[in-house]
Amino acid sequence: MTSILIHRQLMTNSLSLSIDGQLIKVPDSIYGRLEGLRRSFSYDILSGGIQQKEIGKFVCRLGGPAKGIVLEARYLTYQNTRIISSQMRPVFSLASNCLFPQTYSPIKSNAREDARAVVEILNTLNLFLAKE
Image (cartoon, rainbow, N blue to C red; front, side, top):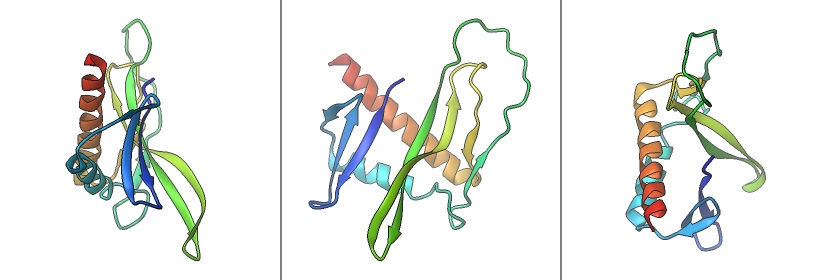
């Protein structure tokens, strides 16, 4: 599984991106786009929240492993303007074959589209990295 992380340095307020631990340089405009999209999907009430779908029984006769993507976002808990905890939480899942259950999805349709856009941007960056 590929791990793609976007980091914000709090001291310098700068952003960096790593794919499987390798630091990648990307234009600031991409960071801005990702950050703007990220604001539309969240577990909070204002953005509509994230639904976790039940994994039901389904028929798929495809052989091999389940393939898909789970997009996770870091959530911070603050107390008196200090971060006291953080955790990664799934916000969107996208199946690549019928064996992979799509279990997480933003409730609002525009948030689902934005989550899908984030996945596509990160996949594109990963493809460029693979070519290097």
